[in-house]
Picture 1 (tube, rainbow over the protein chains, first blue to last red):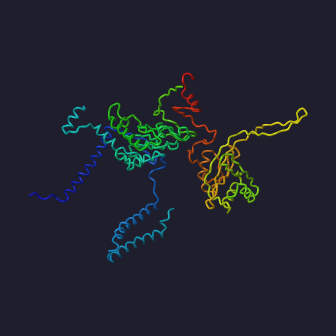
Picture 2 (cartoon, rainbow over the protein chains, first blue to last red; picture 1 turned 180 degrees about the horizontal axis):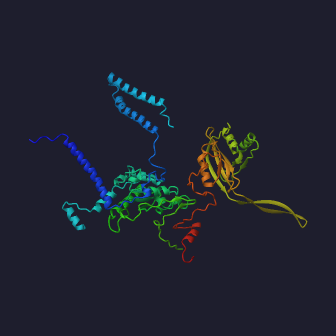
Picture 3 (cartoon, each protein chain N blue to C red; picture 1 turned 90 degrees about the vertical axis):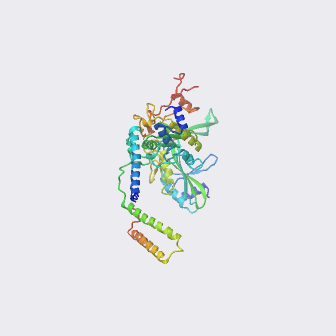
Length: 125
Length: 204
Length: 211
């Protein structure tokens, strides 16, 4: 009786096939570019895309750190929505323990928001 | 491969093709237009992309917001002289192979604003246009017709040889000079390498 | 709403020495307008906006008008003594009026639902003193339209917060809506040239007979 294949073998096989498929496609595209389609680089073509306007300044500028703070606060509320939606749907049939748990979770998030608010992070300068 | 052999093979259940046909088939059925409109023609373009006319039937429903991913530029509407450099720059930023449809009377020749001070008299003064669609504005069916005409053109393009398509010619320019704002008009007012209208014989 | 004459007399009573003028309009709508001197236009505008009986709180439209130099014929009856007899002559005198630019404001009242009252400001000439006073501080809605009038007519609005070109590009050096504007000559043949186009066609596409 042949021994059963290792359970991770299929996973490894899928990884290999996936890699070969992706790299193969990229390689074909590269071959096509070399073989048929001549590259036509140019100053305008390579320039930064600014909706057709002439690019001004460098592309690699630093964003304000405030931008990231906003992003993080947004993420917090995003996650909150993920939990709040099922919570709202099954609200009537919830056990008291679950209710308290989600309230504690909400409290934590609101606490964080109040803290951010107090620090003045919500004011865009 | 000659036509007789191919039809004989297909009768036997064997599909034979050339790389050129395969390439053109893929190319013409996935023309992704650049997502921009300049005037009222853009409304018709939007209508063409919506359910009633459904440009997706021709594989051109993926309007790309970036020129890096677009194959087709539908110049839909009046090109003002202030907008012309931007349009040319967008064309330049598109990767090869790229096609241009001039949609509507304004994009072709300036249309009703031809004698105005601020309207470019046709986008083909700066970029090569593959299909002109007359109308003011052309109805969505006309745009679809223009798209089909472009597909036919793509289907017959050659990958090699002296008459190969512009995208495959090493020496053919991939980008065209962007006009600049001058004190009275765009400088230059037209790309003379590109825009050579036939001499007109006036008869009176 | 009050008539323009009433508005004029009240304005002049409120702002002494203003020097208003009523410009009649001979066209079909017959909307007469109030010509205010640019130097004190902002006071007059404030009065029109804040006066409780007028309350013209909405400036719907700012337009420019270009008046070229023109010759006005004035007919007058003159009595002259010729050969000892008095005779009446019709005399026609020609007077040259130098050109100027105008900024025209159409004012309405949103609160009292009346209007329009039309306000005009005139520049001294069309060349170096094409200046009027910006009414943007009074009516915020005038901002872009005054920029447009500056762009297309070359009327300089003094006191405007941001007087730049709005439609044409910044490098443009002409005022295309002026009557003496000459467009760049990139004429193209049209299938049915007529009038001045025919003349242009003759110049651009000569046939042997003309050349």
